[in-house]
Image (tube, rainbow, N blue to C red; front, side, top):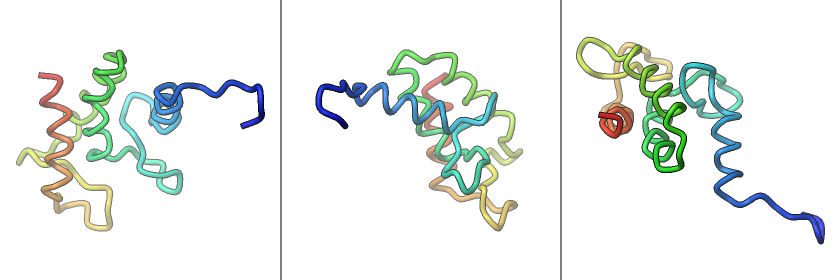
Amino acid sequence: MFFGQKQKPSYEQAMDWVKQHMVADQGVIVHTKQPAPYPEVTGYFIPTLYDWGEPELARTCMRWLLSIQMPNGAFPPRTACPIRSIPAGDARALRGVERHA
């Protein structure tokens, strides 16, 4: 930061990051080397999006999570083994869906 130049508040910087790391009409990516939305990361952003006054973005994420949810209730992981779910990741994704309910 240069002297005299005003930096954005951290809240705005965080929202900019989330919006830059979203896949349109889906969810949040893990990192730029894998630009695919990730259920776990998306799930734990949903409550924050509601808290920060971004309900439409939160609902977009929630709709995407519900659209990829497997018949057994789990979410497909974005890993080398796409058939097997990861309980901790499922829990984070469900936390976001639960916040919407």
